[in-house]
Length: 136
Picture 1 (cartoon, one colour):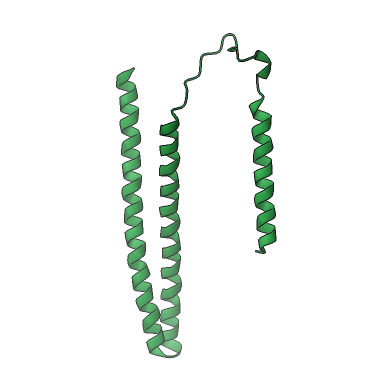
Picture 2: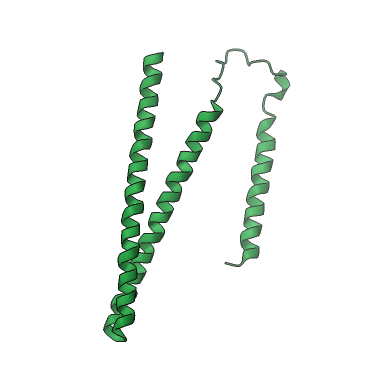
């Protein structure tokens, strides 16, 4: 995909998000900061907890992406290695198959780290939910 198209798409996305932010920031501006009658007061979002939640989500997404890339590389190297072993110089196929084994190990490691991180996240969420229910 040409870079000009990618840059144009990113610029359009940024502009649309900017205008959406402007459009939604003026809601209920007529009230002058007064609460709307009959509405329940909203709880303030804990900024530190929100940052930690976003950080954890990004780390999980990054691990999932790495696992998918390593899995794809393993599959490609495996197919290429088997094909080369059958058709032409066996030493090149052996090198590709060794690369497939190495990327398979990296895939296993990254997948394991991803599973552990997902379990820790679910436990942390469960603990927070339990703390909220016992505190109130």
